[in-house]
Structures are given as C-alpha cells and as structure tokens.
Amino acid sequence: MSLLLIWAIINCKFTVLKFIMSPSKVEERLSKLEAEVTQLKISLLNSTNTIKPWWENIVGTFADDPSFEEAIAIGREYRRSYKDLFDPSEVE
Figure 1 (cartoon, rainbow, N blue to C red):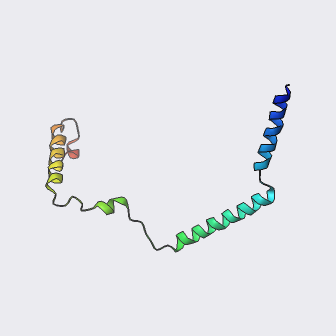
Figure 2 (cartoon, rainbow, N blue to C red):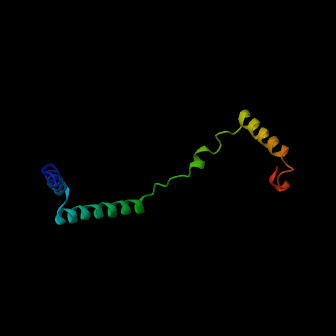
C-alpha cells in the first residue's frame, strides 16, 4: 500500500469523525425534535382553520359562460358519436 493511500484513508477517517455527533448531542437533538413534533400536533388539533377542497374554490367559475356551454355541447356531441361503442347509459 502506498503512503499516499494510507494518508488518504487516515485523513478520510478523521474527516468523517469530525462530523459524527456525540451520543449526548444526538439525545439533545432528538429531544428538541420530539418537542417540536408535539407542538405541531397540538397546534393541528387546536386549529379551527379548515382547508377547503380544491374544487370548492372553482365551483361556479364557468357559470353562464357561453364558451363553457359550447365546450359541454361539443363534448356531448362527441360522446354521442361513439354511442355504439359504449353502454347507452354512459352516453348522455
């Protein structure tokens, strides 16, 4: 084994060891994370802010829109053109 390779291995081990946390640091960090998760859970349970489903935000957007009505008519016409391929109850 060359001296350069040995030096690289030793240097690499020391570099890795610098970034490894001590058990007490890991415990400290884990305690902080557990406290944060508990706080988040509590705030979620106490939250009165309800999020509406996405579709409730767009209901009525196309009301009385001639372009939308035209798109619906074109879609209906397209489905009817294939009525022989589908179950009649599926085609309006």
